[in-house]
Length: 278
Image (tube, rainbow, N blue to C red; front, side, top):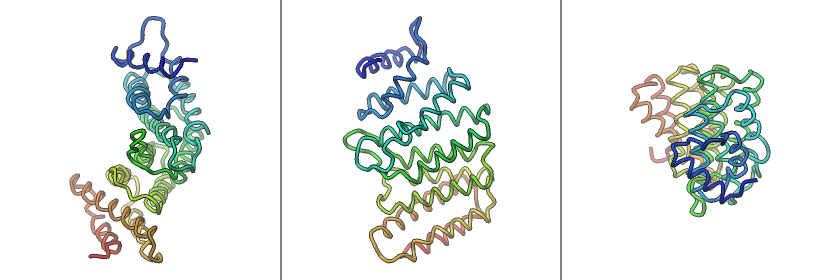
């Protein structure tokens, strides 16, 4: 087994060599080692080297075939990666989970380019991805000791890829919207590291690609008002703040794109209900 220090040296050399390997080296040999250290607490290895190498080899150079991508995905979705200590807070296990979900993003991008997951495999992935997004409790953005955790943002990136897959029907889209509401309604964290924009990207994509009818999306906006009826509490204030920020991000994203004009009034109506200063 390669040590952490040797892996850093090797991956830095590979990066310096434009992600080419030396003669006799095999990319697949590095996968096991990168998966072992995918949640390393130091961003130099986790973010700058391991994730960057995954991104280049999976999305950039497309080094792995369908069976190899399936094998990577199977490992990513296990209890040592995406679900590693799921439910814990304020510890380093969050990095394993949030950087595992970024690999899911890369694999979904490959699947969208050329479908290789069966419907059963896609459904299994969808269930696990939504379970992760709903059950993740450590929602810190940038962590002073360790760098980016960013669970809400990384998970949103994966959900944005998921909704664009040909297998994502109306039921899947609505499941994703429900998971977004659960994230906004987490009650503990007020997002401050652009999570609202990353989450809004999912809904922008659904609207722009007409993946759901405007009436269903408008009805979902109405559901976001539910927290207004809660008893006053810190949880209620945080939920309302997250939801307002999300709606404002979505409004201006649609305005910039000049899309979703028929939904603007619904967004404004919901924001007005959530905004006690309106």
